[in-house]
View 1 (cartoon, rainbow, N blue to C red):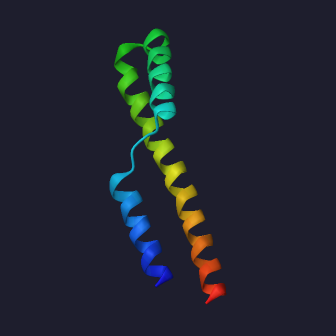
View 2: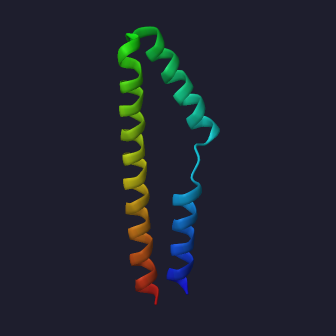
Amino acid sequence: MKMKTTEILHGFWAGTHTASPEVRRSWQQISKTIEASVPEEQRKVLLQMMAEHCYIVEHSGFTAGFKTATELWRELE
């Protein structure tokens, strides 16, 4: 039963994850800074690279936490 709940929560997070207001404000600040200091032809590429990197970091952190939670639940069973 515990694993089923964890799987449902993981599916929900993966399917509906949205950025918090703080994250959106941070991206807006980053975008403004890049717009002011990076040539136009490089902006889109740089922002895309940063977005992909942030997703990878966030996903790997979630995956590590999910793995740890799974191991703890197995110990409790």
